[in-house]
Length: 159
Image (cartoon, rainbow, N blue to C red; front, side, top):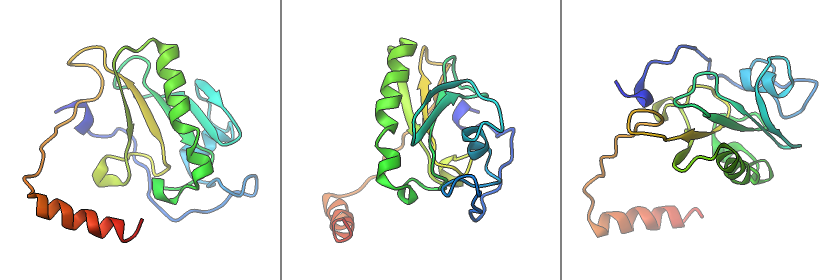
């Protein structure tokens, strides 16, 4: 079993958001929101008004880090843009500070996409060798240009 598809050792509930009185954008029962509020300790790398980055406690490789918005939402499309604007610059800073020559930046949305914690988060996962880090199975679908064009047009109607 590849690291990407290994069983999760923690179980997290995907549930409706309940808001904390301490912050209007955080959930009372979310592990990542508790880390943001410093109720649970972490190895903090970066903290801004809208973002928090820390070391993953179940790393796929040495230096695996997480970047989370200080806004509780399960899916990326639910997070306001101003909370997402710092994610890639922080990922870049972590990769540079870690001296990673090869790495993955990953963001999953939903259980089927392997999201373990129902709070949007981005992974910076060093890829030092073929065995360590993120393992991906990539099986492209066989689609005609017409099928791709039809899906493109459907998406463009909602952009």
